[in-house]
Length: 385
Figure: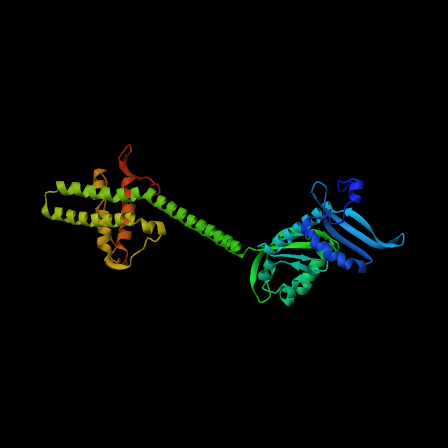
């Protein structure tokens, strides 16, 4: 009586319809029609407490004889809390089922022998196989036949040693020859059938491709930086020494210009002017190379192969330093062996540059030294240009 909130007297004065919600009365009436043929029944019903609160109960009834009359012994068990728990469990199971089937990542459950107990829809799409061909069969059927034995032995050995819990990346070939990179996450599960493994797979082929492209770009940038550094070093070295290359012929040109200004004879002035023009052209060619930084950076300073007058080239290179030599009290004489050919193939600008450097250093680092009895000509070793 306490379950319903009625007193014993109140309860004895009531019918079985009084403790039921009004909307359940038609269902009860249909049930009572079939009740006499059932010796024993067990059902869950909705009852109503005295205060109107709902109550879920399990009614177990059995036919008995009491004082010569056919009666029923009824046992009432309150199952309200149990039904709430069952409903929560059902909802939880539905949620887990929904998460399992709607997950974007492929998932499978395997036992100790590698048999596939269950897969989700994403796994079926991942391996391009129907669920009926996967569940209940070894998971390695998704791989080519040639690797089944190796995969099977590896799995069983590591399962027995419980060494399969891991997160790893593998490049695998699926049936049909499709190659992909897979990130595999494995977790242990305990079930009534024993331990099993949950494997979550993820296709990371695009990520691996991006990583490869990034590494390639980094390598290419490293090579480009090394080339750029080498070009900068070559340019710096070239420009560090170019002042000597320019000042040497420029000093000769200035000396010739000075001689030209003070030379009264027309023929000699014409000769000086011709040498001055030739020297200026050589200096202009040198400046052109200096300003062509693209050649310096690429380290592609070319050497020409064209016919030119060797005698004229040598004469012009030496004549530039007549004035600087005279200014230092030196005698500069040019002697060309008769066997030296007049016309040759080569780079007149480069040869003249070499002769100008050598002659300029000779004049620059040669001085008169006065001894006790006479003057003597003494040369100093010139530093590297």
